[in-house]
Length: 319
Length: 233
Image (tube, rainbow over the protein chains, first blue to last red):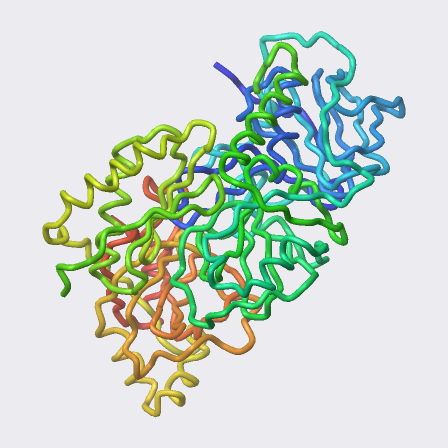
C-alpha cells in the first residue's frame, strides 16, 4: 500500500503556487470547474521526467517561484517557465530530473521566460483526492492544500516510489519562438455568426495583450473591440478551455483552466487543444495573435504535439 | 406543449467540445430532453468522452480529440431522440428551508420596492412557485432555477457584492438560486438557507441536479441552528 508522508515543506510560497493535475473531469454537471494545470504539456513532461503517470499532481508555480525543503530523499524535475533553479545554492537544470537529499532546499530564482513552471516529484504530490482529482480550485476552496495557494509552513505529502531515475541530459522541447508574437490557432465559433465581419477580421489580424486583470479562470484581452450583431442574450451553455467569449463591452476573455462550467456570452472562436499549453504560458502584458485553422489542422497539430512529448522522453514514460 | 420540437443539432466549440443544441428556449419541455439525452450519452460510454454537461437547451460533450468517435456520438443522439418521445419521468422534489429577509436577505426590501408590494408578498410569491433545476454552473453545486414570477423578477444588482455568504438565496430576473459557498455575486439576495448545497463529504456532493423540482419553504430565524448543515437523511 502507498503511504504518503511529508515530502516537501514550503519555506516561501512564491506568488501563486498550487497543486494541480490534469483536472477534475466528470463533475461539470454538478457545476464543478475542471481546473488542472494551465500548461498540461509541461505538467506531463515534468511527471514523465521523474517516472510518474501523467495524472500525478505537480506544483504549478506562477511568475515568482517558491522555496521548498525536502523532508526525505526525493527526485524532482521542473518544466514549463524557465527559472534559475538551485539546490542549496548549487545550480540545477531546467527540464531534467535531479536529486534532493533530506533537508535540501530547492529555490526558484529569477524567471527567464514564460509564466508557469511545473515541479514534479517522483511519487507525485499526494494531497487528498476530491471528486477524482487533486487540482486546486481557488474560488470554491476545493482540492490541493485546503483549497488554496500554498503558504509558508505547508507540508506536502509525496507518494512512495518503487523506481529509480537515471540522471541524463536535460530534454529540449519546442516552445514559443521568443522573437515572434505567439500565434494561437483557433477554430471559429460556435457563435461567430453573431459577430460583424470586421470583428472577425480584427480577431485574426490584430495583436492582443493579456490584461493584468487575468487569472486562472480567464485572460482578459486588450485589443480591438469585437462587436456583436445581435444584442439578444444567449442561454447559458457549456464552455470549453480556450473559448474566446465576448461580453457586451466587446473586450474578449480567453477562458482558462478554472473557467466556469457554462457561460452565456457569445464565443467568437475557440483555441485548439494543441495550442492551449502555449496559452497557459502567457502572463500579464504578454502579446498574442489568433490564427484560424480547420478541424483537420487542429488534429494534425495535436498529433504533432503528442509526438514532441514522446520524442522528449525517449522511453515514453508517463506520457 | 409542443410535440414538434426540432431534432437537436451538433455544433463544435473548438476541437474538444461538441454541443448538442436544441431550440434555444428556456422551457421545461426542451430542458427535459436535454436531461434525458445527457443521461443517454453518459450511459453509452462513447470513446473519448470526458464529461457530459446539461445546459438550458444544450448538452455539452467534452471530448479528448485524439480518441473521440464523432460518428458514435451522432448515433447515440439519434437513437436517444427517437426513443425518448414519451413523457418526462417524475422529477425529484426538494424542499429547501429559507430564512427570508433581515440579515439573511439584505435585498428583500429593494425587491419589494421594485415590485410595488410588501416584502411579505415577495416572500409569498417566491415560496409558492415550484421551480425546475435547469442546469448547474457558476460554482460547485449552484443550480439555476426557473421561473420566478415576473412581478418579482428584478434584475441583478448594478454593483455585485464582493462577498455573498454560502446559502444565500437570490433572484436575477426570472432565475433564482442558492449560493453554495461564499463568493462574490450580483443576484438580489432575499434570504438564506442553513442547508449545505454542496459538500464533498456527502456521497452525492450536489444537493440538486438538473431536472429536479425545488420549493422554498419559509422558516423562522430561531430554527437556524437546528437545521444548519442539513439536509439530514
